[in-house]
Image (tube, rainbow, N blue to C red):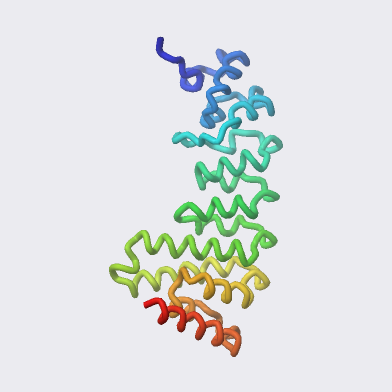
Length: 218
């Protein structure tokens, strides 16, 4: 016997024909897109707990905005941003930090959401995650195999724009020291990104150590 997809059935129904019994059954299918089709009166904490009981994200898109804001807890918001970066504006500001930002930066083309990130949410770690995401995008575009200079310039420009949204205390010398130590970005590229005010003895010491290590591994 063919299994009934209650989520799909509800998506085709006018609101007046939907019952709580149908919603409860559909919620046990754990399909996040169900929230797209439910009248607000059926979006209870119990129904949401049932929908999001598993870690299966599914492949269909769903809108966080369909869930009343007072019911958008951190777990649901994290699921939402992992599913779609377009859900970020609907995440309550108090949750726009740490793992939520890490998940945002895991998506490509996150730049137009930067103005929605609270200044207090930036730290060396989140800035580093954002920089690595931009660098990864360039690499995935073939940037350092073909037209390397052009794609490096793209990366440097996008990084500069991103850093303009970051408060000063989150992009201090520790950030650049960590970038040098991590070794993910070419030394000369970091040098082009580095603010002149940090190019002092401590920086050149770290830069020299990194260059020596790069020579040793060749």
